[in-house]
Image (cartoon, rainbow, N blue to C red):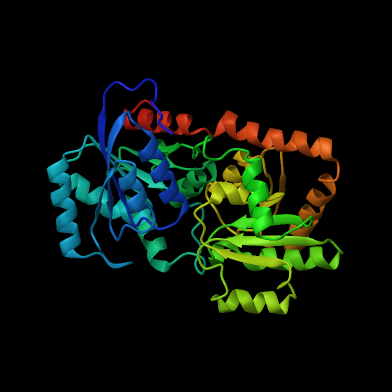
Length: 384
C-alpha cells in the first residue's frame, strides 16, 4: 500500500536506526512506515542483524545496512561504521527506534552532524524482573539526556508518554503517534477464514486465538489458566497460539498444557507469515499480556472484523473502545469471564455481526496507516 502523505513540503531523506529487525511490534511499524511512505527516502540501519524485516524492507525498495553488533553489546567497530554511514548519507533527519538505538543512534547521529534527531519509544512500563536491567539502565540514561539530544520523542501510546514523563523524560518533547495499519492487507476475508479453519480441522468449535511471541510479558500462563476455567465451565473450544517460540519445542509451554489438561484444546502454530489470514479465522482474538505499549495485534484483529478480549495494558483499552472486553492483567478468572461473555454474545448472530462491523470501523476511523505516516512527517517538520 502506497501512502502519499498530505502537507509534505519536500522529499525528506530519513535514516532509521533500530536495535534489530526481528519479529516485533516496533519493527513491524517501522516496516509499514518505510514501505508505504513515498514522501520520504528511507534508509534503515540495524545495530544487529536483518532478522525478519531486513529482506522485506529491501523488497519494498528500502536500503538496509546491518552493523552486526552482538545483542546487548556495543562495539567500537559498529559505532565507527554507523558514524561513517551517517556521514555518507547526510540525512535531513534520523529517527531512532527503542531505547538502545535512541541512546547509541542519537549520540552518533549528533556526532555525525545530523541536526534533527527523533527518538522512538515503544514500551510502557519498566519493572525489575520483567525488563532487562540493561534496558532499564539505558532508559534512565536516555531520560537524563532527553532535554538536549532529541528534537522530539515519539511515543506509540498515551500510556507510554505518561510513563516516560514520570521517568524523567523531557515532557515538552514527548509526542504521541498511534500505530497505523494497512487496511488493505488487514481486512475481512471470508475465504481465508474458511481455508484455515478447514486446515486446522476445528469444525464447529468456538475458535479463539492469540498472536504474539512467547515472552514473559505476553503472559501466556495467564491465558492458559483462563482457558482451563473456560473448559471447566463446559465450553467446547479450540485455541490457536501463533508466534515465535509457540511450538512443541517449548518445554515450559508443553508442561503447562499437560498440567492444565489443555493439550486437546490448544494448537501451537509457531511463527506465521499469514497473520491477516489467522486473524480472519478466529471468532475472538485474546491478548493476555501483563505489559504492552500499543498492542498491534489488537488493532490488526479488529481490522479483520474480529472481536477482541484483552487485558488492560498500554493503550489496549483505547484501541478497543466499546467494541470488546477489557479486563485487569494477571487475573485469569476475570479473563475467563470475559471470554465466556464473548462466547454467549456470539449466539446472537445479528448483534454479533453489528459488533464485528464496528470493530473494523473503529480501526478505519482512528488507526489508519495514512494518518500515522502524516503524523510522522509533521513531527519531523516540527509541526506537531
